[in-house]
Image (cartoon, rainbow, N blue to C red; front, side, top):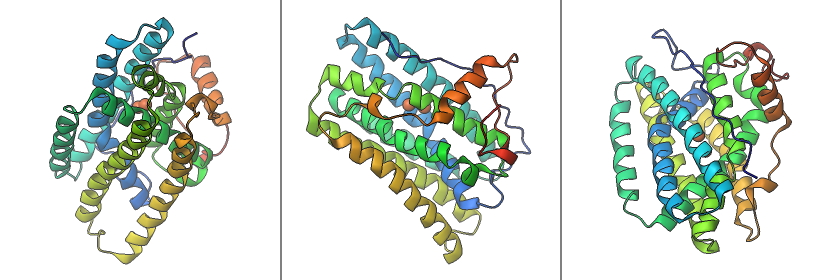
Length: 283
Ligand SMILES: [Fe+2]
Ligand SMILES: [Fe+2]
């Protein structure tokens, strides 16, 4: 049976008056998320292209269905993030265009690597994401309370869908290669690379804000980066075990609440998080 992976269109609006510092009390955290968002229109098309190439070698109909849905979800993600990123550039951070150009160059380079390398990168990044999903969802009150609900809802929608397709890149890697050592290398390479791409983005934004050399700001940033590593690291460690499969990772309870609320709603509007009560069940 294929996995339950639904392609949802969430038409978030990012009006020109949107604040790039979408969490007024946590500017460093805001820019960490902005940096990650900036990477998505470069990372996710790379994942899609890699999967499209791999399907030539896959015969399992269920896996082919999963891949189609994976591609559909990732395409929705990066096109939405791209619209958000355009707002960031128009709203005080035009220098992000240089960061984007460096991301283009990185993925042009990676396009020349073997399919096994690219699939290991894809599966590795997707595995690491599970740790971030668990962090962002289970700690959403601390991370999103009082924040711009549009950005919080965009991030959490993306995370929910990452849980739905969490095993697809891994299954494709296993089907095409299955070798353990390149998979573990891909896990490290994919996760750290995307982390560094995000860093290019938030460094540029914090420099623009005049905060990059502020000790107070740097400590706040390191505090969040440490949390990132704790959560990403535990997912990565789990994934290094030879018999590991992403389906063994349990999704946070809130994921099914989000999916249920999304299915019950009778409007075409995006499903929004009420950031005044971010810790409570949605809906
Ligand atoms: Fe995604
Ligand atoms: Fe993904």
